[in-house]
Each structure stands twice: as C-alpha cells, then as structure tokens.
Length: 245
Figure 1 (cartoon, helix red, strand yellow):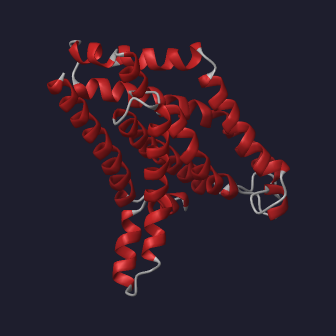
Figure 2 (cartoon, rainbow, N blue to C red; figure 1 turned 30 degrees about the vertical axis):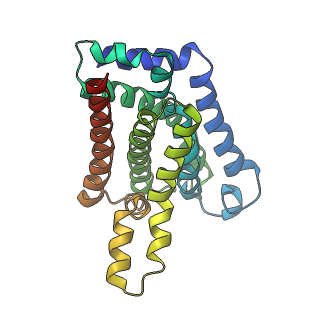
C-alpha cells in the first residue's frame, strides 16, 4: 500500500498536477475571500471569522477533487498497467487505499497553506484574537472529512472507465448529488419527518453540523461510512475486473 501511496504522490509532483491543484485552490479561495466583492468577501461581512471560506470550499472541492482522482484508475486501465497491478502481491484493499490516500494527501497539502487565513482573521479581530477557535477547528475537521468522502467517490468513478473525462463527470455528478441534490429533493417533501430523513442522508447537513464547532459522533460515523462504502465498492469493481481478465 505504501508503495502505491508513494507512487501516487510522486506522480502528482513529478508533473505540474500537484502544484497546479494547490495553486489553483489557493488562488480561487483567495480571490473570493479577499478580492472579489460579494457575500464571500471577508472584509465586507464585518465579522472576523472564516465562515465564507468553509462555505465556498465544498463548491471548489466538487470540481477540484474529481479532477485529481479521475486519472487514478482510468489512466492505469488506458495504458494497460491495471492488469499488471492486479497480479502483484497486494490486495485490492491495499491498492485502493494507496490510490485513495495519495489523492487525499494532496488535498491536505492544499489545505495547509489556508491556515494563513486563520492568522489573518486572528489579526483582523477587534480586539485582536477575537476568533472562535472551536468553530474553526470543527470546520477544518468537517472539510477534511468532506475531502475524504469526495476522494473516495472520485476513486470509485475512476475505476468505472478508462476515460478520464467520463470519470470526472461521474465523480462531479455523484459529489454534487450527495452534497446538494438530496437537500433539493427533501425540499419537495410534504412531511417534516421524511424531509429530515432525506437531509440526514445528504452530506451537507453533516458538514454544516460539524462546522458549528461540535463534532457529533453521528456526523463522524456518517462520513466514515460513506467513505468506506465507496472504497468497498471500488474494491469490488477491481475484484470483478481481475476475475474477468
């Protein structure tokens, strides 16, 4: 597994992909938070908190993470190296986790420089240091769990096809549906119990809950379960492919 992880990380940074992902994430968030006028501009909100960042980050992740993961298995299938990997003395779990952790590590590396936003908000507070640390930590935990879920979805989408563009589209659709789609469907429900149930199946309600600064066990279980589900069905897809080849 660690050999696959090392290979994935080195492949990201041996080309421009790793640097492009980190740079693009920082540039887009920086522009929306500090330059562009609008509801996400921190200097215009009048509040020294990072809520706008944690609101816009999921939108960026929906497109950025599928762009990272689309080549994970699709490229291997296209060039014919996936069959070679499946014959190696590694389990399907190790192969899937290696791919997953490689992409997830890149997202974490992209998040680390955003800590400068925390320092900036800390200094902008009146008085200096007027920052809700609990909410900020909870929001970062939620963002990392969200990134893990989207990464698992992207890895699964990549295992379905040897076309990277199709893998990207599938991952974006699944991520968007689980984050925003279910909430939209819940809005059409006439009963509050059904509406609450559908909302609880979506990612957004759990992400919003953690972003309040209270890490609920139910939210952790949800994110871990969804991430594990997509990793497991990716393994099943690889197992089916190995038995057919």
